[in-house]
Amino acid sequence: AASGGGSEGKPSRQFSIQFADQKQEFNKRPTKIGRRSLSRSISQSSTDSYSSAASYTDSSDDETSPRDKQQKNSKGSSDFCVKNIKQAEFGRREIEIAEQEMPALMALRKRAQGEKPLAGAKIVGCTHITAQTAVLMETLGALGAQCRWAACNIYSTLNEVAAALAESGFPVFAWKGESEDDFWWCIDRCVNVEGWQPNMILDDGGDLTHWIYKKYPNMFKKIKGIVEESVTGVHRLYQLSKAGKLCVPAMNVNDSVTKQKFDNLYCCRESILDGLKRTTDMMFGGKQVVVCGYGEVGKGCCAALKAMGSIVYVTEIDPICALQACMDGFRLVKLNEVIRQVDIVITCTGNKNVVTREHLDRMKNSCIVCNMGHSNTEIDVASLRTPELTWERVRSQVDHVIWPDGKRIVLLAEGRLLNLSCSTVPTFVLSITATTQALALIELYNAPEGRYKQDVYLLPKKMDEYVASLHLPTFDAHLTELTDEQAKYLGLNKNGPFKPNYYRYCSTTSLFILP
Image 1 (cartoon, one colour):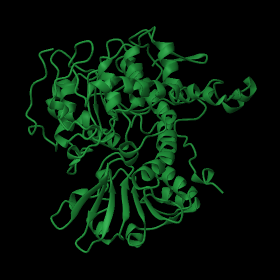
Image 2 (tube, one colour; image 1 turned 120 degrees about the vertical axis):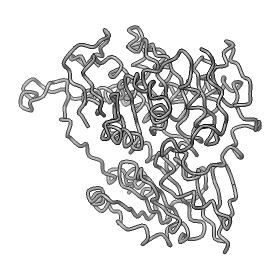
Image 3 (cartoon, helix red, strand yellow; image 1 turned 30 degrees about the vertical axis):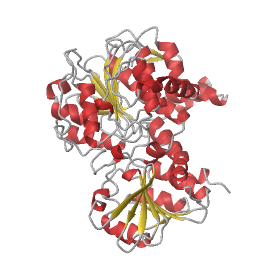
Image 4 (tube, helix red, strand yellow; image 1 turned 90 degrees about the vertical axis):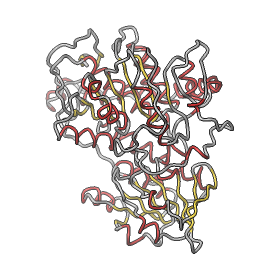
């Protein structure tokens, strides 16, 4: 991937963000489409395996599909599709609570809304629709952007938040418990609007990007920039770039320091326990757990479970990550070696078929199986949809899959992302990611022609440091400043960046283990 954008040239719009003493430039109605006409195979999507979620969503007593309802907000607009617009007031309170834990976004909104750095931007987004996302969307709106939004996961939408956004005038197409057909329909409703050409994409998983790329190639060519925040989506972008098919610049937010080292690590460290506890009420002490993958997500999961007294095994393909796991006190194994004895299996690799039908057949009775990666490709859930196995829904997003001999496994969220499907995630950590996304959009949108080629870029280091600095006041933290002599000795600017782009910030779970 190319490195972050250079500093040469002036932005096409007169907008800049102050970094200490440095500056870094940063409706014919939608066509009616039959419910079964949208292809579910347009990409290796986050809805690849069969889903029966729509038949037992617990989001409302009203089982009528939102697609069959005629709803309008208080302003008379019907350009949205949510579960129940009447939940807007409750959703607004949730958004207000989230704002208290998202200081950087609120600061960015206050500092930049007068200059409207996103004026003229038409952003189409596909992310988890939560209170934290709502704060991001409203910040983008305050900075001048028009937004249309769909959900990147069929389980993670908070219906009341989606209603609040629709009431505020945001075209939102999402509800908790969508079917696969609903999922693609919602994405298409965001994109396929007469007289509205998106010029920016904010994606989480790559489904929106691939939908536009495959279905609307002419529209895709007019996109000015893509911001992607997941491992899965970034992988797809690199594939397009390698094949010479990426015709717009893209920003890889997933591998930015502020995403990798904070969201992936700290968020998962806290939310893995929340998701497991809410769905199973289990005690962690003494339980044997295997975590597949020891990247930042795996590190966070392992740290939390070890701190709770679980016996944790790790599987890993990368010898460097494997060595980290060993030195953090975890036993490195192959999945086949422990599959019969473990009580919990957690996947967080970003890969496919990590847990196969063979593994599932060999699991002990009542083994809990879940995924902390973005897509539902890691666990071969499709192989469980066979006549000899019985599915029993025991509570929201908790299924017992029962074998003929009576053995059962406990499958959470049908193999989809556990924390956002079954629980919540720490707002403060998401503030870091959301601020990074907002700055990446500002940078790509305002960049002069030629700064970014048709490639995938990493966020400039200075921007990462700026995001971090916006969050420090929350902790009443006081940074030490270099003297002129010290800065000269290190060969640094006193105001950063303080590390070269190749620097890898330390991640070690040993710091997080309780005695």
